[in-house]
Image (cartoon, rainbow over all chains, first blue to last red; front, side):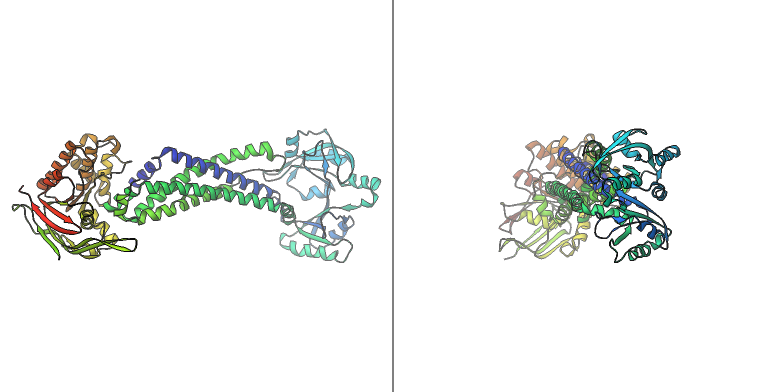
Length: 386
Length: 244
């Protein structure tokens, strides 16, 4: 009780200095949390991937398509439950800044594999009926204000021309983790467009999505699929949906790593600031620590006093930062994050990282002053003028 | 030549030596040089005595006080206090010994600025096994003894220098130690406050029988003591008993 009272009063002794240090901690730890949330958001798509879904693509690169007849061959491989096609479209809606993903899919097969996308039955039927129908995710619809019945014109970049779609369905995510920030339309429309305008590009697809019956056998099934097309004109590479998603993150991995690195540099900077504060504090109080030791308190008591004060300051900064981070994240998402990320939430592991960082700053900042205060010779400390 | 002095209190209170200093030497390292501060000191101080250590700056009086208080260690010799050679104690044992046996009064009071007068006085009692109630009784008693019962909730910065020194004295005696160590206790005080503090020390010595060893430059403070010990260049040079 006495110890805690002494620690609390010491912490509030130089109020301005303590307040500025706590403020620095709040800013640094909140920035750390925000940057970690950005890193997490990059991996959100991969986190939502299913363990029973594989993605088969051209082994050379995603840029190279696969013949559509591979679908029937893949379907015959043992362990494969169903196969769907998915083709990146790359259209622009009004302005290039309005980026969102569009996929041409064979809708009945594709959405059967994605139970996490929930359709209202009437809208689903309307979507299937309309060859130029579009199914838009709820997050995307909310972002750009799309409603069922809206015209949705896209300017093709990979498939040049103006493509007119009509929003026939807006699907929801089964849970909060489901990303619904994309648009789907019928592969048949795209293929017929290609047959008419670019016949050599027709009957090709970007990837096959393969649903397997046993998650434990995905590796064997992936090998079997790739073996089927070995030494063919278009060899395949089959991987889990998660690995496939992560390969996209890998394209920008350097940026993600830099963001992550910067977040830790911020912590290193605030560690230096907090260590300086604690060093100043301990230096000013050397004569008090020497007095305590003269009275019979041991070096461990003095060390605990310095450590506890540092931890109190770090905890105050850490808790305020953790309270502030979701607010900062919401602000970031509303201002710039919406066009980049489908999901931008501060996850529990980020809070845990913030708490760990605050604890580390508290302990490390106190380390040198703690040792110095505990080791100071009483006669030297008593002579010290703070 | 060894400096050897035997100091005892006025005859009515003279008892066996509480402090026996035998062949104590201490030097400091300055750069690569060893600078002797105390050389072969031999001294007895009787139980219940009030001794003033005087001498010019650098004579070694504060060093001798620190050695007797157990906050510094000699290079050679023995310091036997109440039969125990404190030079043989390790840091932990020495800390426990100080907590139980020594009360400190410093020139600049050395109170904890964030604690009230009450809490400062209670501080040494936290190292004892006394209950909260027993601690409170003792703190109340010593604050009354030093005349600060009405200032117990004040922090040091709300007290005058003389009042702060009285709090420090209360803190020094609250554990009922064998020995009071006073390092220039009046050095930072005006004449009136200094006189009050000296009167208080005298009362502790005569009324409660506390043994007091005090370093001072102030001849008036020295007059309050029963014996003067002079040091010069690290050696005892003279003692002058006062009739008290």
